[in-house]
Amino acid sequence: MKKIKQDMKHPNDVPVIFLYDDLGNIQKKISINEWRELKANSQKIEEFEIKLYREAITYYTQEAYVQAADLLKFLISQTDYTHYEYVERLANIYRIQEDLMQEKQLLLAARSSIKNLEFSEGIIKRIDQRLAKIDQLPHSSVAFNQ
Image 1 (cartoon, rainbow, N blue to C red):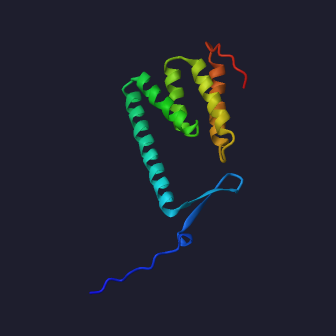
Image 2 (image 1 turned 90 degrees about the horizontal axis):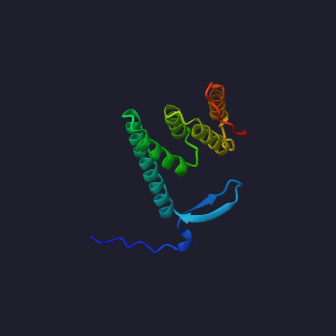
Image 3 (image 1 turned 180 degrees about the vertical axis):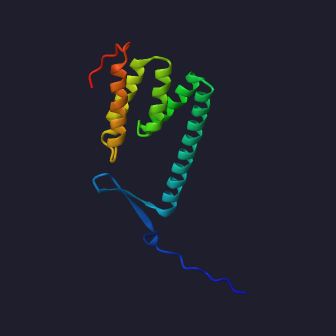
């Protein structure tokens, strides 16, 4: 049996993927192998975040609020406040601990980060409703400018 020898391909014939910025300009081009590696890394990061969030929920249900808050703070900083479920869970912890100032600061930071995202109107409405509830609490002496 004779082996079929493949011709060496020209380097310019290797498929590439163009990465664009928000304005539609080409940031850089990468090979298909680099793209696959980036995609695999992003999936690993997402799986890691899911595991951490599950761990935080476990702490939350066991009323270990300090540990849950630590994990949620890490997740929030990694996602730049874009996953509102993390923010909402941490805000619940602050409410349980009666730390209204921390809760309000967290919600305001999340609101400012989320307002520039597409389809964020519903989340902003939820944040505004929650902020209004904080302001209506009788023992609320939290004074911040929105």
